[in-house]
Image 1: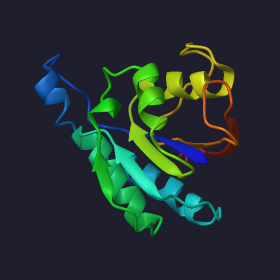
Image 2: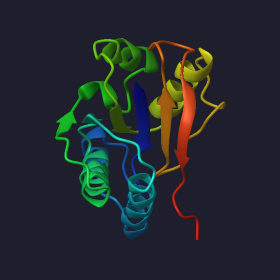
Image 3: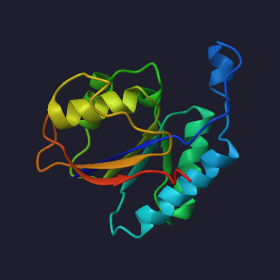
Image 4: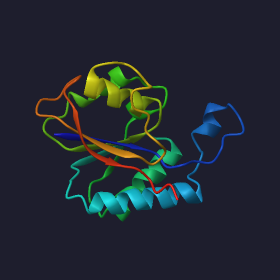
Length: 161
């Protein structure tokens, strides 16, 4: 089982603290370019995805649509509230325990995905251990799924130039 964590691409700046407006932020041109770059490199990696679970926020949905198209992945997009920015890594962990032996792509936000990465690889709740960049993709492999049992087997950073 591999859990892929993809942080949404660079998004427009939020000029207001309103949650409703934050949910509607779109990817920037750089965000779109970065996701295309990461998808192209993912497609060449011989990894596969069975399911794609994505935050319902617009920037994550755009990232998912672009990534699936550019990587030529045929799985459907499944919006999941558990991937909203205000969720917790423990909520996501409990949710993922319902899946068996599937390779799952999670597309969402920081700090949630970074904290989840650390929880799955070291068992700690620590944001500073691994901070996913906008558009970064990591793959964590599991012989048996659970906290502290993941091993990073894939890491693709967006093009920084």
